[in-house]
Amino acid sequence: MSERENIFTRIREALTVKAHAHHGATLPTTAEHRAVLPAVGATTAEQVALFTKNASDLRANFQPVTDTAALTAALIALRDAEKWRRVAVHPGALAQPQVAALGVPTLVADGTATKEELGQCDAGITECDALVAQTGSVLVTSRSAGGRALSCLPPHHIVIARRAQVVADLPAAFALLAQKYGGNYPSMISFITGPSRTGDIERILVLGAHGPKQLSIFLLD
Image (cartoon, rainbow, N blue to C red):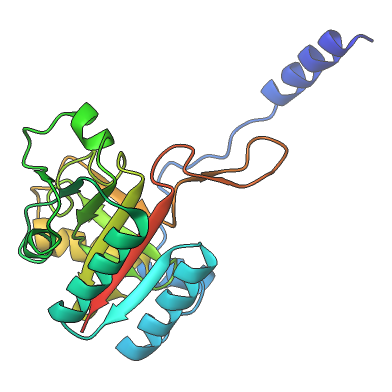
């Protein structure tokens, strides 16, 4: 039997197997979801510690900062190390004042910036909706992160968050979205889990293949 005939035989065999009936089945509860997901500590300190570990494992740069002055100093250090010529920023209460202190040309992602302009920026600085301790993910939406492209096109994505935004797990993150936005959800909701990566070619990890090569997360107390 040729390989072609073998493939068609396996397809015909697969088509004889009936799919499981789901009519009337109930969706898993939040408790059932949490039973199969990694455990998360109950306190904020435990959740921050878990997020720190997970973010590090994912090759994200996670850095707690004590206040906005320390945050400004950390961003200036990045500016100098990476020789930023232009940055893009989400027009938020945390992000925009920080960029003003950098002294480099700034593109504000207010809906008028083009994809080409955003792609030419060295860094994109945004806020977020939450940090998910369980997975080390950053939860962003089109409203909290300056649209769809700002967190994707510049090679270095920088997220500014507050400690109060750390949530335990994915069910808590979805509950936060429901409470925050009600029935008026943003057009884009995304969980960013480390820098963009792929291992498609010979299972060799390559960063920055489909998005930012670097992800830095600054956590304000």
